[in-house]
Image 1 (spheres, rainbow, N blue to C red):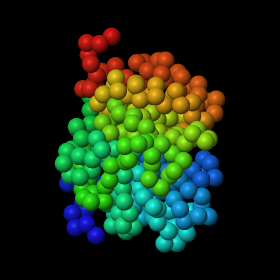
Image 2: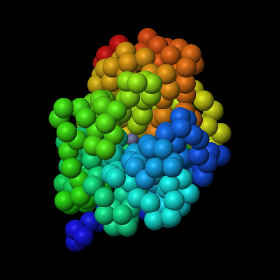
Image 3: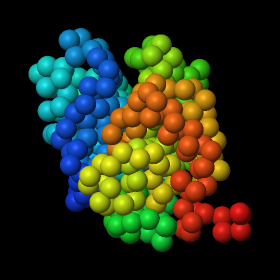
Image 4: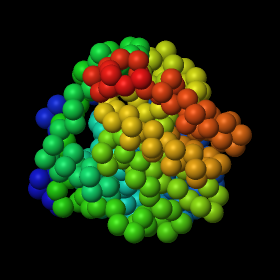
Length: 285
Ligand SMILES: [Zn+2]
Ligand SMILES: [Zn+2]
């Protein structure tokens, strides 16, 4: 066991939840999405096999919950082959240290995200001034310090393959964070989008509470590069996914997904980019 495994110094429980919290949705027979307070984790693998992977690790102090979800779906003492992180924000690495201690499994992320996962760099402070609602305003309390995964974190292979998920490829979708990735399976065009785009207006507390389904760009208070974020959404739309599990909000599929993604690409400036905020170029039109 790696002695240096640790959470960031500002690790803390965040009191925010949605009506979806604690609920799971089997999106496809081998694709299961479960909501931890306000963020989704994904389990990829058939429930009757012991061969599965966990994508993202929920909110701080959610390890017990995640262990229970995994054991309910895959059996007592089951453990994933690996954990894949779409990115390293606090709500996606919340339980990663505890889970790695418990399972002793490797964790994979994009190499540009590694500084935030090895104790090297903190993320920029969330932008509480950004156009948006209550969640944006309370985002100053969100942890930004890096976790320390030590020798457990590895770079995703440069050839686009995803360890232990041979049918998937990873796609670099930066903008929300530098090393953000999404996962795509060509066979059924299933997409695990992370926060490249989400299906709920994550800045607004009441929309998060009710999980009202509505296509949205990446959560605003943490997104630092809006040009890259648009390029990433264009990349994902071009894949014509038939179903998408996003980091926040309910899974979206078929016509609604296709139409919503097209709308997001065509009207990104209006739908996704905030009218004002620290990371918005005030001079551009
Ligand atoms: Zn994020
Ligand atoms: Zn997120």
